[in-house]
Length: 352
Image (cartoon, rainbow, N blue to C red):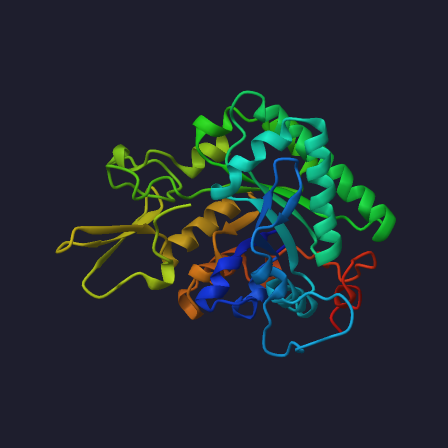
């Protein structure tokens, strides 16, 4: 079987405060980890939203003091993880649902887009990332679709310039998180965006949630035939044509009934006493989704976010990889460890 599938997972910096650290990642199952999130100033400067968690927090094994300018935090821990797993790439994810309003002003001008690209690539250079993931939710109003295309062009150019100067032309990746709802993606200039991207991360989830008046599936593949009102959106239509949620690993089982629905490829948990309904993926449903990915010849799977998964046989990520054919099915592309232009001593020294 050809090694062609990607498995992308987001590592959210705030999960470190819930005692989920980079070392808790089942890193061998992923090809990419997107570090969430960086923010954007009105002038376009990209910066770390939580610099304490990212580069300052001390972990076991970190020295109390070192000479020179050094980083610590989650970024250092992730770098150590990718030193161990050379097929794992670290992406700096910019934006996210809560911060996406900050894209509008800077991306509307050429100078703002240039500053965005330059400062984002500077973070790649200084912190040791393998690329950039842009999570703008969503560039659909007024000039935003055009602004997004030009932002990608500017960022792709800045990555290539950096690589030519400091990384022997090694390719640094550029991706986006894309909506699955037709009311949004229909307004975006997908064909014009595509040449600048290595791959797309389709957000095939959050189709419904606590904000809705009707309980619906939140990550179904197909529209439901028996109950169309339960599937306002669906992944298949998107491919072919932040929320009040409970982590999968924390879903209660006792006293609840779990339902796997074959036709829309969706599952839910329901407590008849409390009337509580949770729409989520079971291992059985995620395995069906892996088969769908293979059938449709899609690039792989993306997960939000890594701390929500379970360990062992109940892991959704592991069941997805198994559905692809195992670790050997994952695309092989060595990550970058050499960052000679970083302003941090320990990054330049690869944390030796």
